[in-house]
Length: 208
Image (cartoon, rainbow, N blue to C red):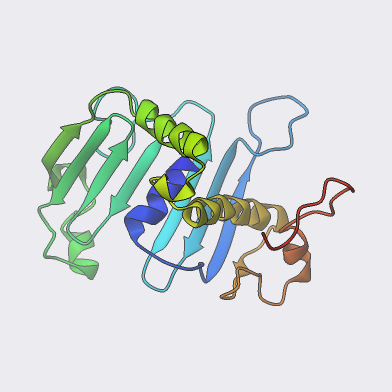
């Protein structure tokens, strides 16, 4: 959820995606696990697309490489003139030398090749990133003032929901269309996966 939250924040998109699709499987490990250890989920918006890639097998550094050490967890934002690599250790901004070229011309110019990009900014992080995050949460618990949280509860709930949407698309095995109310359009089977039947007295109200 942490990286999903950053991805949605960086894209600056509101609401829900138009479609959700996911594929993957459980590879290499010979065990009784059912959760995929390799999974890709795609969320399509009118103005952007978010692709979330999860794998627990060895992986090389992504994008231009990590700022400090291997970036096994992080985000890459692709723009019209370059891309941004962001992880817990800092960020790198790579500017494309073919940034003013688009379409077939860009592909012909080799715009996707590593040598066509120039590292414009490299900014390592400072300190331990988890400490202020946890301090903010604990301070809000002690004060019982949720408005002091750095992220609104609704934002965190939405980011968590996106993770569930990707898993539902994986379990359904097909591309799912969404409506504005965070429901799957015309798909009762997928909607049944949005929640489960609670066992009394452990029941959570639909509206809180």
